[in-house]
View 1: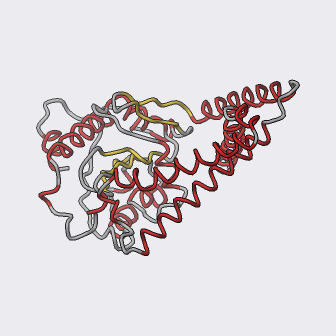
View 2: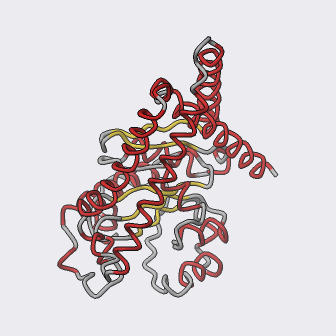
View 3: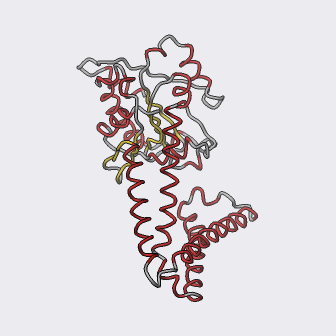
Length: 319
């Protein structure tokens, strides 16, 4: 924030909009500082958008994991300006679902200030986050430089944007966004994603219905059952491994060794899936004919659920 402030203060061209740099504490104490600013400070009413700098780890790439609410122009600003984009709408869906027991100042600005924004955070090396090992020497200068490049570029884009003058005119519409290998960000309206889900689910359903109607193709139900069973057994196997590791007093040993988790849990999951499919193939050969079609059917049902979920969210937002 200091470096970005220094850069903006020393540039020759004037800014179209003002920028507030809010250095606040009391985050871990129920986000009191951000709440105090947005509800009591006289400048709060002038704020049209914000960029919230977060951390759930130390170093690595800073990821955009929340945007909005709505205001697709903010995502478009990041898409156009960020030099090293790294973003995922999946993080937004997971974080806002409440599965992760965590919170950021983003919610305070959104709920109490009715202000749209961008929430980004460092997420690597989470095993030392909020521990005695979370020291300054572990902060990599490369990560700070990368984050600074992105934040400064996006901020310069926003302060020169005409949309910031009256962002309420560009409020409506959610976005689906994700990066491709950190090179470019793909972003499109959520309604387009809903249409794509409908098209893929319908095409899959028609394909499977046509194939199931052909003589000698009655193995789809059995193959689907085998696929679901393999998923259940895989989950059970991973839970058993986790229980054994916990009983040995090493429940979190894999947290700072990523490949250890792959070898430990990935091997158990892969082995059980191969075992179930091998047994099914040996006991009933016809199942192998539906190995490709059964996941299609399962994902088709999942797409239908996602479409209904998205439509329900649109209905709630409209209300």
